[in-house]
Image (cartoon, rainbow, N blue to C red; front, side, top):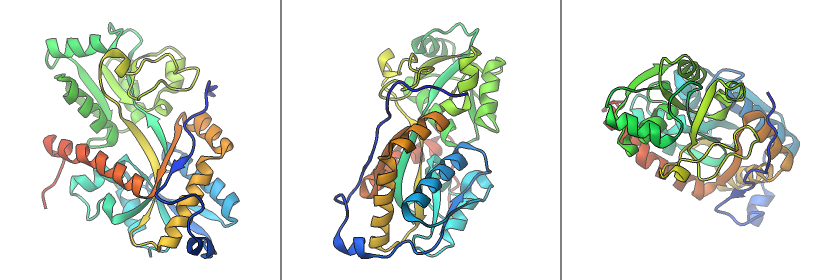
Length: 327
């Protein structure tokens, strides 16, 4: 399915360095050999598609081969672990996302997002609250009021216990005072099917997981959890939660991280490259069409600070839900 977009997404990156970097960084010869980009998931998923898209533009920019290596397992944990086993020289990176925070916060691994040099967040994928086409709910407030009036009546479906979409839905439920049951699925697409079959009353997922079913009229979208409406034709009519009086916004994201300890000159090279790619209209168009996502890129210290702000709600929520292991 191809979705025609009405408007350009947010373009460009913010960085801790001035455009062009310093003279010393500009003089560093990097890269001089191929780059290994580790993806902690199987081929064909949205993280893998994003990685291969960025790899293509990096190859054009740097003139070096970028090898995408899929290391599936542990919800991304094996890929992150393998990344950290490499030298911090800039030649091995990984695709970071919400799992970078949730896996570390779980206490089940020996690393957190702070063990990486987090180079840049490049895209965001809006979370959308979905119900079946025959659902009686026509607005976000309808759903919230019913869940509060009839505690435990409704069920939410989510992908992966302790995964980002689970936590995003849990935060929304907590923030709005809803009382609902939970049913976990193995993937976002399975959670969407659960909604379509009325096995659960609602779920929150990114557009890539439900766009075709939504376009076919099998689903209703009550709200998009972003500050503004989606730029695509098919999703532009979905109202934001804030438009409906619910001050809530969250989204999945994807970026690039490396083992901690990169030379500053190499970090600068990476940040400049990600900025240039993010500003490329062709990259923006492919992100929109293929991933149904927005380019919204931040790098360097700004990215690190943003990760801290995300961890500030993710870690406490995981403890509240009993999803952390004390060491």
